[in-house]
Amino acid sequence: MLKSIVKWLIIGLILIITGLLGFLYIKDPVVTQRLLTMDQGPEQTVKGGQSFYVPVKESSERSISDSALAAAIDYGTQTDSHALLVYRNGSLELEHYYPGHDDSSITPTQSMHKSVLAMLVGIAIRDGFIDSADEPAATYLPEWANDERRLITVRQMLQQVSGIDFDSFSADISNGFFQLMLGDDIRPVALNNGVLFPPDTEFDYNSVNPEALGIIIERATGSDYADYLSAALWRHIGAPDAAVTLDSEKHHMARTFCCLQATARSWLHLGLLHLQNGSFAGRQVVPADWIKRIQTPGEIQPNYGFLTWLGSEWSEQRYYNRKTGTSVLHSEPFAAPDVIYFDGMGGQRVYVIPSASMVIVRTGAIAMDWDDSVLPNLLIKGIKAKTDT
Image 1 (cartoon, rainbow, N blue to C red):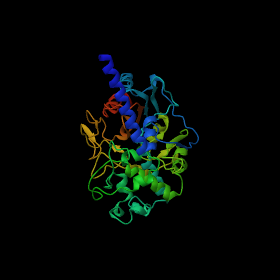
Image 2 (image 1 turned 90 degrees about the vertical axis):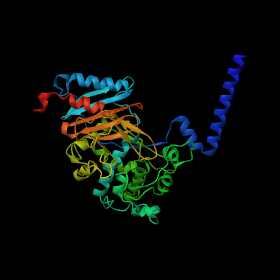
Image 3 (image 1 turned 180 degrees about the horizontal axis):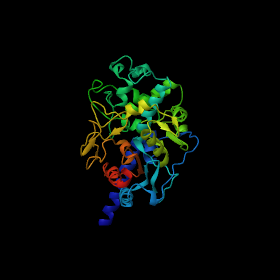
Image 4 (image 1 turned 120 degrees about the vertical axis):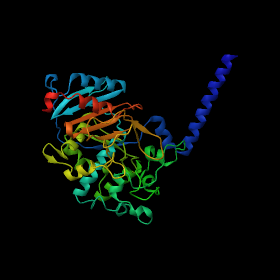
């Protein structure tokens, strides 16, 4: 009797799941298929240039203690990391890859792309494609020209204080959240949102702002996003080819709020641009004054610059926006006052600490219990006293 009940429960569950998937497929076959396959769309190559090798120090030459480096590796193990790189004073103190991964491995790094986009906007301003950060976004987005969105500037989008509306996670796969993440035509998804509040009144981290900025880059430069990213930045940082994820071959728009596929060393080189005031291997890739603006705390959210997080003020939980309860633990204040970091969901991180001449890269599985204080503080406190004199 019990076996029969279990059998029919299993059959019933299968039928429910099958019916639900069928309903979702009818509602939106593309999003349903991508949900099932964990595939966000086709990729477009971002061509790299001449390689640049950052040397790795011998253990006897390290300026960070072995115990601190070992503790950092252990934290990486606990959080199912794929790569952990620690750079200081011109070379790598640690280049550690966890089982199954090496220097050619690529881990999805989620929203870290936003901080790369911030640099690219500054380059486009330098190149004369965008007049300034204070220019109205509607100059390039006529969809915003005839309503209250006409007041939104490029700078407000970079600081996530534009007031633009956005959809959060929902069971409805036709809503903006799923369409932005998995849909096959994301331009209208990014450009058809209204406003929640007037610009420069509240901070509200979302993915609509960076996606709309990616559209601005394309329209201002007349190039595919991936091509401009390659020509203006990627070819000049000594990194191998990378890739951006497109919505579809037909509509060919990159997801510029996420999904820049690159190696851990490539992310290190991006961090070095912050450490070196925008220069790399003797070339000024990003204007130095723009790097400074990226790193400048916002008036409304002092822990955010231009699409890049800052450690200006400590709070035990760092919240993102008004529509979700998502937060990240900071169990203690950063051990240095000038931490700058790229933030991707689940502990994808590039930490830059100028006062310690340090860059830390961590990529890996999504760690929902990630603590942003651990790696920077372990490694800052682990600097040997003799190197600081």
